[in-house]
Structures are given as C-alpha cells and as structure tokens.
Image 1 (cartoon, rainbow, N blue to C red):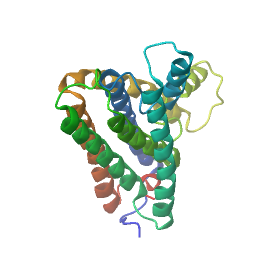
Image 2: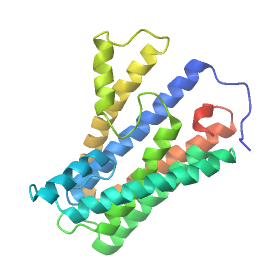
Image 3: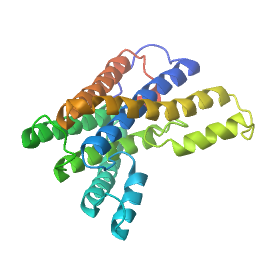
Length: 245
C-alpha cells in the first residue's frame, strides 16, 4: 500500500516539487551522456536520437563512429525502456513506490557499470578501449529512465531531450501558446529542461578526469540519493502523489 500521511499537498507545492525532482534528474541525464560520449568512445547512452544518427553515419562509413558501439547502445536503451514498462506497470498495479523503485534500479545499474569499468579497465577513461558491456549497462539504465519520465508525465520535463522543450519555450515567449493557469509553471519547466541538460553536460565534462568508473559511481550515488529522498518524503506525506504511485 502507498505509505502517506497528513493532508493532501497544495497544488503549487506539488508542482514545485515535481519541477525540482525532474530538473535534478535532467541534470544527471546530461551528465551521464557527457561521461558516455567523452570517456566511452563517442557514444550516447541517454540520447537515443543521437545514436540513431550515429548509426546512420557508421552505416554510411562517415564520421568517427562504429556500428558496434552505437548499435549496442541503442539496443540496450530499447531493452531498458521495455523492461521499465514491464516493471513499473507491476509496481503501479500494486500501488508501490514505483518512481523510487525505478530510480533505485537505475542507480544500481549505473553503479554496476562503474564497478565493471574499474574492474576491467582501472580508473582511467575508456575512450581508447570502449567496453561494449559498460556501454550496454549504462544505456539500459537510461532506457529505464526514459520509461520512468514518460510514466511520471510531468509536462515539459522528459529529462533526456531538450529539443521540443526549447521549441515550446520559444513558442511561449513568442505568444504562440494560449494562456492557461499553468503557463508560468510550464515555462519554468521548459527552461529547467534546457538549462538542466546543459548544466548536466558541463558537470559530466568536469567529471571526466575522474575516469569512467569513478564518474559513473558518483552519478549512481546521486540517483540513489534522489530515490531514497523520494521514499522518505512519501512516508511523511510530503511527496506529490504523481511521484509515488
């Protein structure tokens, strides 16, 4: 059963809480992709669109990308999204803390990838020696994240894609979006998505000197912290219902 106590949260409090949580996850997704691209052999693990294009380049024989790396990342991402759909559907049906559980699984997978990188390659970067297993584990975790964000359905905050958020933000600033009670909140969320991915990219780039393994372990710890806080707040009745189950 859902573990909640206290009166329902005010709508504005729920909206702010959702925005903070999803912005944090957006920053972490940007950092994961930066670490992947810069230390794992020019491959994305969270941005599936980038891998589709990279795969096209590799098939055409252009660019410094390979079919193997991009195909394994894309396949693992798809499998992760499928697994996430199955797991979270079961958790939601049982009214469990599906959001925290999905994040916990993601964090464990990122930690496993970090430990695998350290075990097989030491504390350095995998740029010159890409490891398909590490790439697949991280991409699987980010496929799971894609399902988590989709199921949370926080408007304007997919956590892994900035393009449509940027376009919607521009439309809003240009007055092309009809005025609604949530217009201000949506604008903040769209901006948070764009800025969050940028900030995550900067963060991930700054983490690259740590080496692939240590960077992934740090990101895993951050995701697990978000999952743990989610459970604590839910038990105190301080979490938006959409982020509980």
